[in-house]
Structures are given as C-alpha cells and as structure tokens.
Length: 99
Image (cartoon, rainbow, N blue to C red):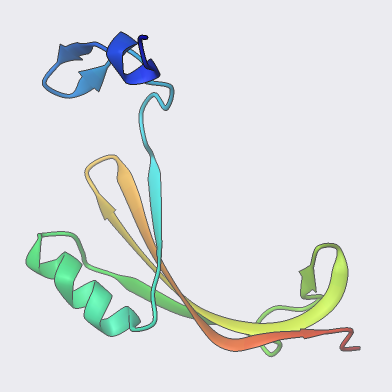
C-alpha cells in the first residue's frame, strides 16, 4: 500500500512536488519572551527590530471575533531580504465586552 509520502518527490534542494505556498513574505512567531526571541534572531542576522505596544490606549475600537474586547500585545517587526518577520507577545489577556 502506497502512502501519501511515497508520492511526494524532491524537485530540487529547496522544493518538493507538493509545494503550495509560493513565495513566503511574512513569518510570525508567538513567544513568551520577545526580547530573548529578538536576540536570537539578531544572532542569525535578522534585524533591526521595530517594537510596538498595542492596547486600549493606542488602538481604539478593539474587537475579537467582531465583539468589543480589550487586550494588549507587544508586536515586533524586522525585514530580512524579502521576508517580514513578526514576533508577538500577549501582555494582557482578552477581556470581552469592555465598553
């Protein structure tokens, strides 16, 4: 009996026959320590990083699943060649129904 893996072929050193993504333009990492994650990427040559905090003071009309909600996240961006790297840290858990 042939499995799905048996039908996948290597096209070249960076492509399989079942590739569906095309060119990746953004990669997002969710972390518990954005500074440590950024430091690791800087050691790999990815950076500099821009760091933003999004919360009820900086973002009006926050929603989650189309309902009013309050939350806070730290978001970090860097670009390396044609790929945008994004790191996200949840600072404040979701508070549904805030007005």
